[in-house]
Image (cartoon, rainbow, N blue to C red):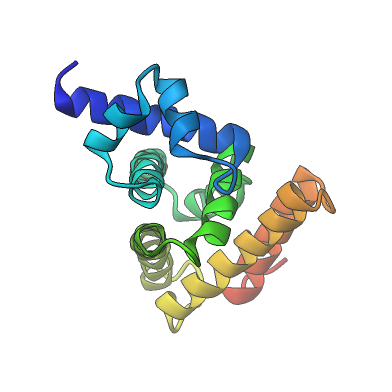
Length: 188
């Protein structure tokens, strides 16, 4: 493999291990084994575990945000975009993000990646809220603050659903929609 292909392969294998075992249990040895390479070869591409898991997360989050943007761009109606946004995402998505939140307090590179990608989500939601407010579809005096509140509600509902199994997917979806409706002054 070319060096860039090998690095990409190692990142993909790291994501497989992280998804299976979680960030905390992921080691460079387990990633090297998954990649079918030696531990020393892995370290030619990544100086340490923190750099590797942060890079792997960065790859996954970048692809996810691109898919999000692509899906959202296919929906013309602003209300339909907002409804789509309220749908719970798949478990691997949130499991990766929830695990990353826990790991980020000990991994500055991962924390920086999380911040960068959270800002991307926030910009996309802020833009949607501002568009709807400008079109008179809903009330939103501060789209950035409202985006923060919506994302916080979505993340809290995701933890209730995916981590604690306290709420069903239907309840997760309903609570997301209720949070959006309340924050935008829409009828429930």
